[in-house]
Image (cartoon, rainbow over all chains, first blue to last red; front, side, top):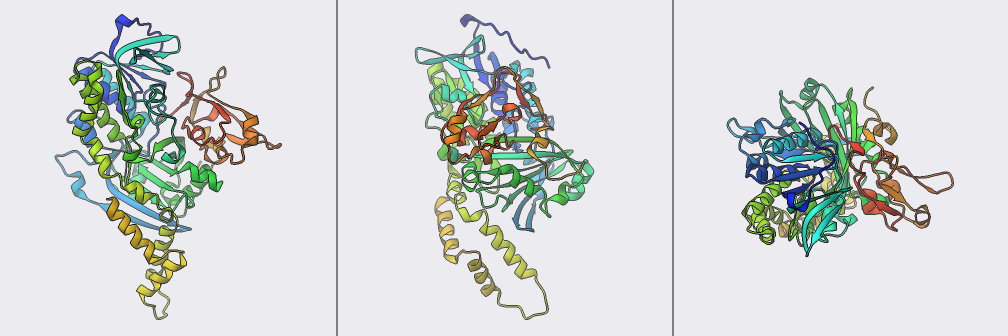
Length: 439
Length: 97
C-alpha cells in the first residue's frame, strides 16, 4: 500500500468529487462505496496509518460489513467471532458472571453476529479496501480548516495545502473539529461523553481459549458492572486472537467530582481476584484511551449537514449504549454507506444533505437509535453502578451460604439485604415503571 | 514480565509516540489553573499528565498524550488555552487500538 504524505497541491479546477476527513470505519466505508461507483475520492487521515489514532473496546456487528459488500467479513481483519456474551458484576472481592451462549448466533451458512476487533488492524484493512476500489488515502495529514465559498463548503486546508471537492464529509470522530468549524456543533459537553481506557494484554491463543471456554477462532465479549467505584460506567473485556482488551469506561464529570483517578480505578479492576486469573501471565503491550458519546439519539446534533458538508460516524454522535451492549463501529459504517448513497443520488450539492437524512432513515440507523433512546433514562440511575452489584452479590452470598444453621426466609432475607444496601423495593418498582415507559 | 498494577508512565512507555518538539498541541495557562478550585484534569486524564508540583502549581507534559480530549471537555475554567490534535504524523500511534 503506498500512501502520499504531503504535497497535494491542487487547484480549484482539479477538485475531487468528495473529500473525506478521517480514515476510520465511517470514512473508509463511505470512500469504498463512492469509489466503487466511480467518484473521485480523497480520504485524509491524520494518523501515520489508518487506525493509528483510534481505540475501541471492542467489537463489530457483522451486518454492517455485509451491507458494505456481501462476503466482506470473510476476508476482513477481524479477531474472534463472539460466541459468548457475558455480564459480570463485581462487589468488593466478590463476582457474579452470567455467560450467555447461543449457537444460533453463529450458524453455518450465515455471517456470525459479531467479531471482536482491534482498530489499528481493522481500520488499516478497511482503508485498504477503499483504496482497492480507487479511493486515494493520504495519511499523516491533519486537516486544519474548511474552505467556504458563498455559504457552501468547497474544500479543506491542511497546513500549506488547499484541496477542493464538491462535498466534504466529516468522519473525524468524537472530537469533531470539522463539524465545529462548519458551525454545526459546539464543543462536546462533559455530561454527554465517557472516557474509555484500556490495556491490550498479550496472551497465547490457546490460553485465551482455555480460560474462556472457547474453540479456535471463537471469542467472548464481557461487560462489567460495579468496577467504577460508583461512577457511571463499567468495565469491558474482549478476547482477541492473541490478546485480551481489558478496559473501563467512566463519566469523567463524576470522576472529577469524586476526585478519583480513572487510571487508578482501572488498575484496581485489573488486579481484582476474578479478573486477574483471566489475564495472569500475560503482558500489556499497549495503553489506549478514547472518548465515547453517551447521549444516544438525543445527543445527535440538530443538523448533520450543510451545503457541501455531511457528518458521519462518531462525529455525528452515532453510538448506542444499552448497558448490555455498545454499538458504534457498525453505525459508523452504516452512516458512511448512507452518506455515499446520498452523494451518488443527489443532483447538485444542495440536495445531498436532505437526501442523507432520508438514507439514514432508510438504512434503519436513525430509527434504531430512536428506538433505543430510552436506555439513556435508565442508565442515568446512579445506584445501578454500585448498589445493584453489591445487592446482587449479597443475595448470591445468602443463597450459597450453608453453615448448618436453619436458613431464614429467602423473601425476608432479600428485603433485609435491599434495606442494608440503602435501597428500597419502591426504587426497583419505580425503575421498572421508568423502564417500561422508556422502552 | 507478568500482569501487575502499572503506573501511567510505565503504561505510556509501551506506546509508540512521535513527539512534536516544536509545537505543543495542548497549552495550559498555569495562572488560570492555580485559581481553578476543582482541577478535574488531575483525575480524568487517563495518562495522568496533569499533576501538581511541590509548590502546588499545575504541571503538564503533552508528550504522553493519548489524544482522547477528556481534559478539554472537562476543563472548567479554560486553563487549557489550546487543545488541537498534534500536527500530521506526530503524537501517539496505536498499533492495536
